[in-house]
View (cartoon, rainbow, N blue to C red):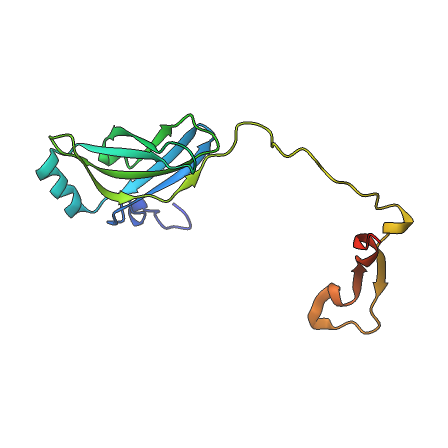
Length: 167
């Protein structure tokens, strides 16, 4: 009890009655998908496919061979971790049901997501400048009339002309 009132969890909905799937990144090797399927769509799938639901994971990276694989899931779980073992790649997912013939019927398609690299950046050429050199020293100046609506930027300013003027 909080301040004499009982807290009820009934206001937090388990499902929203929307047919959608969302794909997220866990790390370079794993994805996470969560979904919600309307009751009427579930009913049609039960009649047509004996409630055999599956995820189809699509590898869609440009320049790579596009392929996909299936994972049978329980619809009530609402989410699934997916091992893809493909860092630095693009993926999308679909949720649907499998017909007895083996045909996959998609009911929702996810967003496209990109797994991160599993190594340090390939860009290793960094450029530095000596900010203590007199040639590249920024000039700090004070404005003569500060404008209260502009904040501190109107009162103090930094001139980067000497920093980026390489001549």
